[in-house]
Image 1 (cartoon, rainbow, N blue to C red):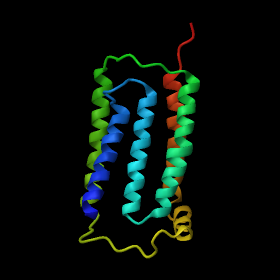
Image 2 (image 1 turned 135 degrees about the vertical axis):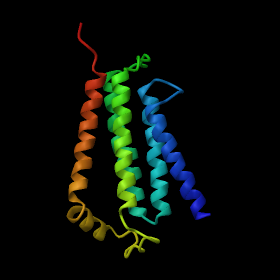
Image 3 (image 1 turned 120 degrees about the horizontal axis):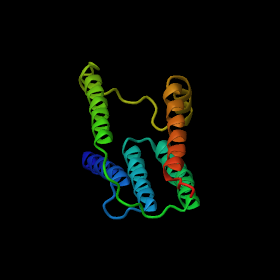
Length: 167
C-alpha cells in the first residue's frame, strides 16, 4: 500500500507541475499558482511517506503558505489578466527541447554511472531537525544557496515577463 501511495502522489506532483506551465483550463496566472499549491501539497505527502515529517511541515507552512502568498501578491499587484495565446517561435522551441534533452541525458548518465546497486541505506535519524540543519548548512550549503538564488531569479523573471509596455 505504501508503494501505491508513493506512485500516486508522485504522479499527482508531476501532473500538477505540468498544469502549472501548460494549463488547458484557464490562461489566468492565478489558476497556475493554485496548481503550484497542489503540487507542493503532493510533495509534502511524499515527504510524509518518506517519514520526513519536519520537511513535510516546512513544505506546507513555508512554500504552500508564505511563498505562494508572495506569488499571489505579485500577481495581484501587477494586475495580470488572462494571457492571449502566443505564437510559438521555432527557435525557442528547438532550443528548449535541446536543453531539456541535454539535462535528461545528464541525469540518465549520472544515474547509470552512480554505481549504486541494491537499495539505499536506511536513514540514521528519522525526522531530526538538528541533524537536518547541520547537514543542510554544511554538506549541502551550495545547493541550498543555488535554490535560493533560483527562486529570486524566478521572481524577478515573473515581474519582467508580466510587465506591460508603457504607451
